[in-house]
Image (cartoon, rainbow, N blue to C red):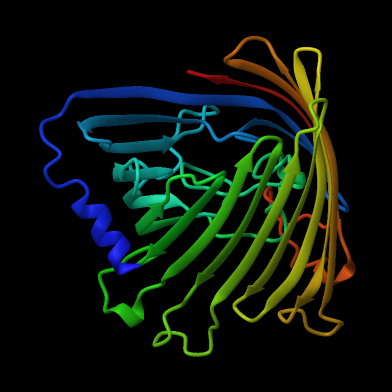
Length: 347
């Protein structure tokens, strides 16, 4: 590993003067109306930003150094078109802030803040196998089984693609801060292998986050395994995904998802169902066994290459074990329906 990283760095030495450079401004705006009705709760109607895709703007650039070498960066910030607020009041570029160096034969080495390998987000995500990876509230893959999202102080390696295979490695010296000594920082470790060739896509991702053992000696690390596979038949794409989680030694479980993307007219249908089971040791006074299920469908109609209209309906429910502790993207909801009509625009 050390020799590979050294070779990557040395590959850029003597690259010569720059041949070309470019900077691009880009973004997404999404807005819609969301109806939610949870069991024993009042129905709500919201003007909802980022129910599927997070609204954002960003700047990315690349400089060609010659001899197959490049240097580049990505700076990306989130915002809410509901009220114009930034997604984070302390970080200017909370979604991604990365400087990278790349060689065509050796791969890319990147540094900064980024989404993790199994997050379903950002430039270095490797997830496959589910039609609603992060969006659509109750039907999103992270619903009731949160994965790692974004980390600061990251070092990332992404290999070139060999016969469809790509390797990704990621380490964070401090998920939030790395100013304390090494043992007091929260560390993230990720390794992923992705295959994408012809009609097939598949990935296997292993991730771990350690805690501050001095501040909380009883706290255990969090582990996840993500596996996904999908196959484009030419008329539709069936998908399967699986996740195993051991979160701090408390929440342990398995989640399975079946979904599909079906092109139709000038858009595509997306349908999915998922089931989760496991245990949650935080539950007292009853069995710690937990179950969760979700099902939903959406149609994404393209008004143009940059603009999409998207109606959606979904349902998620949990067994009684999670009546008090269940988590969904929109708050603690035991059993709930959602309906949404929205639009996103790329620029």
